[in-house]
Amino acid sequence: MSLIMILLVGGISIYLSTLFREPLLEKVGKRNLYMKLERANWYRNPWLSGGFLFLVNATLFLLTIAILFFLLDLMIPYFHFIIMFLAVLASIYSWSILNRAWNGTKIHRFVMGLVGSSFYIFLTGVFVYWYVTLEPQFPGDDTFMAALGLMIAIIVTTVAAITCLIFTGFRRN
Image (cartoon, rainbow, N blue to C red; front, side, top):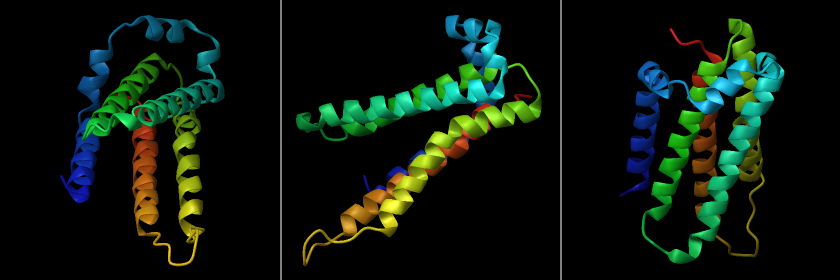
């Protein structure tokens, strides 16, 4: 499968998940975490709930990176795509729970989503900085693959930030 096809399928999947986010939000139901967050006083503060969303995003991202790093030696073809797909599903599910548990004004919901998705905005900035300052490590070193990887990382983190903001920062209808 080519890289363009993978990016296209990923983009279409994210578009469809945001298009049909209402049925996804209805599937969440009354879960244990949902009920605890809905009753918690600190979760009504948009900055604290946004910080919690930030920590959830960071935990899911770092957990995915750790799993991919430790499974690197297995060398199973396309296994990393399955891990990344499961990470996306876990993120969308957690964003749905956090969206359903929120009670407050529209502007506070947007603040919560913006603070929470700032993790991915920060990562995008880091990857852009690495891309701009990319230099060969030795004379004759080809930096094409490193630049390509950084461009993909920029695309992925930007899409994650936008999707997180859409799922958590805007009220369900």
